[in-house]
Image 1 (tube, rainbow, N blue to C red):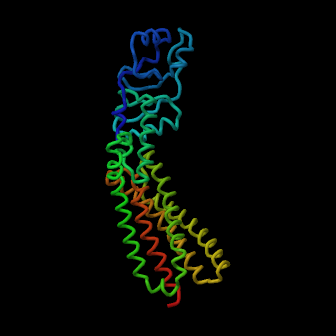
Image 2 (cartoon, one colour):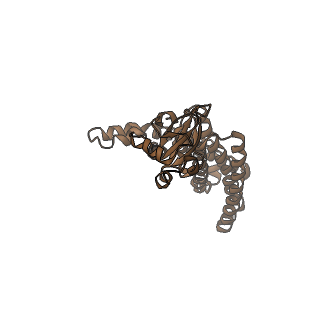
Image 3 (spheres, rainbow, N blue to C red):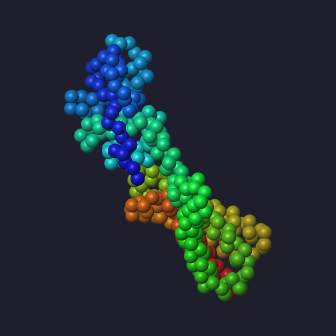
Length: 318
């Protein structure tokens, strides 16, 4: 991923805070700037001390000093900070640009808002495509008529083959509980419900977590504790509603208990797995958005099938 240094331009207006508006504007006129959202205030050591929005400068009297026009403290980032994190901070503050400083707070340059918005758009498209198991190259080659079909197949097929392998594995898990399914055929009716609910809860957790990761580090244990609590709360509510509804519908209390308990347990497991996968990918240096697609779906489906049938085997009479 690009860093602040990759997006930065060093060609920005800088000035001493004691200069007048007239002197500053005269200096601006003699140069073509890459970035003019602010005039950055620095001291004799090039240390960043503040910023003046360009619109204030243009509206002020020529005799006023820049110190009198100083706006909010600039958003400061280091050259190695991730570009997406920088972009989100700028958008959150509704600022026009971001100052890049070194470890001693010396001003190195600034990142224009246009580059940040372009980056956010690019990352949004990438993440959206990856959630569907589609690569950036698939998106870029849509206009190449001769290679379009082959490119799309090559981009999508690996993820679909992963899903196929996961489906075979889930079927293998189900076959291990063949006796329970034969004894209670109605179990098969509710298997899609259990799998769907686990996927839905997991997707919600992944979406929120990936967004938080874009803003910075997420502490593993705090995330697990928080999501486990959320999973238990959601699972309990869904389990009670589903069990009560099923009991009223078919008058089979044990089956209702199996479905309700399965929905509750898989909700908790889904939130934990949906937290571990993105965080694990981050530790490995991979894009956490990948966990929001086929990888997480395959893992959660296999676990959901296994949990559902194990609970059924334990609770239903043999």
